[in-house]
Image (cartoon, rainbow, N blue to C red):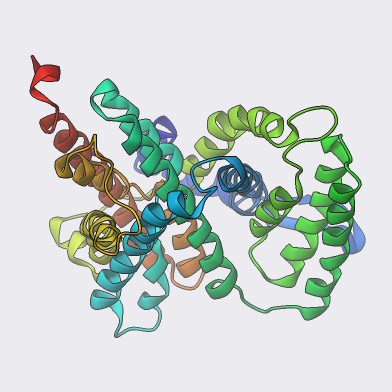
Length: 371
């Protein structure tokens, strides 16, 4: 993902910049008649391939809720309150800069997101100096953050709703539920019906990535053949990590730096996202941990210091994938210039969060570890 993002920046600012935009604007059509779909390559990546990413996210959320870190009220309280703080404060910071303009304010959700793949990858760079409890905490917060982002997409970034197609989507959904109740042990029928569900949701006006989450909710945890959900998760993981997410980064991280100056970072959209991702996430999550402890609903892990907790909260400010997707829904094609500002804000805000988080966690190492 990082390599793809860097490649996109280089490509979009090279003499071949026009080819970058031409490649992802190329229209590709599939199917025929009522089933025909014609979309730009960028939209195929954002609408179709990212639905597979959301399928994987949905599987992870379901597994965590059934047998993982979110499987009990005691376990879910701390990360839930922290995730809520880490979404509310960034949104408020962004709106403090953009609330006066209706178009700019559409991006209020952009700094609310945490990129689960990138944040955990950055945390691994610090190695053994971070307690396992904090890795689990960040995982739970990122998962709940994804749940919040999914709800935001469904509620606030849906346009031209087609009630007829939304009703039509109930048929494949009922088939998926029937497959689950019947204990169907092959994943193929679920995926085939899932494609129909994706098409109906796409035509309904709701962002089609939601279909991935709905499909994931119907995949059985276990069947007579063994653990079905985890097996599908393992099969999807390499495709998502090594193909879909890098493609998404390549298609969306190509920000032109022509004419960029320090003043560009003071544009309300870019500044709101940068401050939202860094300060909003850091203090929102930290405040959530404190509130959870004060209410005796859950407390900071005993083997972690507040300094380490602060570093993890910094790293949670890596928005990237989810933030770029929310930025596209908010501004593209309504306001392309604001979309460019938003992408710049996401890239810089995520980078600052990653770098500061690593520095803080390294500085917070126990003396024995430093020695």
